[in-house]
Image (cartoon, rainbow, N blue to C red):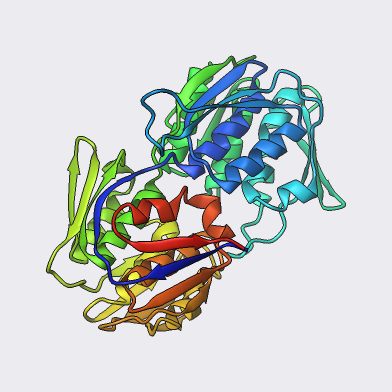
Length: 429
């Protein structure tokens, strides 16, 4: 099992290229099931989750070609995938594949829309709470699907195809919005999704679907209108930059001090998080190549933050912010409203000497003047990178174990950080 070894105390200086967004790349790859023509996706990040989804799609008979590097590509340029679902040979997504990644459950929508049937394993547990699929099933039933659950599998049928409908989500759901959006593109008639999630990744997927011939308006707002079409065609689309990776590195710079250019980042994708970083004492400067983040001389100021759906402060940056606040001058308060069980990093941060107390869904962080390196263990994707942020500023050596969580969502993390002066290395075995 690989580990990451970090010696803290170095300021970060340099440029970090921002990769394509994992949370857009996965549904974009799944959307390729909606057409028998080739979908070409540029700027796809090289991540464990992307490789796993390639295997899952391959199981349905999808051919995927990853184009090699081109002259002039820089080393972190995302890969280009040519995805062809010309012949879907199997509409079953088995447990052993779906259980490894929740997003793979979403294949139910395009399979049902195009093939009028799907048998997809329920996704199983997740470290950060239950995250049920009931709202996804509700959306498909509204579109006319007949759904039963048998032996841990969702069996969905739409013998005459799906039909447009009004889908009102009782609470904002990113996965539910993705599923409803994909399914409705090939439904007969028009569909309205109300109380839709507004995340930029949903607008990115809708943008790609429109290039494929879908008729979608309002994506990125709470009300999305889809006019169903009979068929979608191939297209080419570039995955938008990863706002969570952007926010993570911005918090790392705020933690260590220094100055880093986040190349390719788009500030409008995470304005709430950038505003919080500015309150904490970082200087945020958008420019033609992305965002420059610096903290020189000023200490870290405490903040009070509540996570919220986009455009609020993202739950996926909560752990990273908590790591940063362990060194603030005073008490910070972070309230998590999206997922239960999303404070599993607290015990691990305490191993560095952080002072954090929990009261229900609110964490109070009393800043300390110095963290000390320690052996720690990653518990989920975003929590694991909060340990890296703490380690970059901690005195002495930190060993981060179980980093396969990191590889799911951060492309070449240790290379990007070491290029900016961090003492960080991956230890294999």
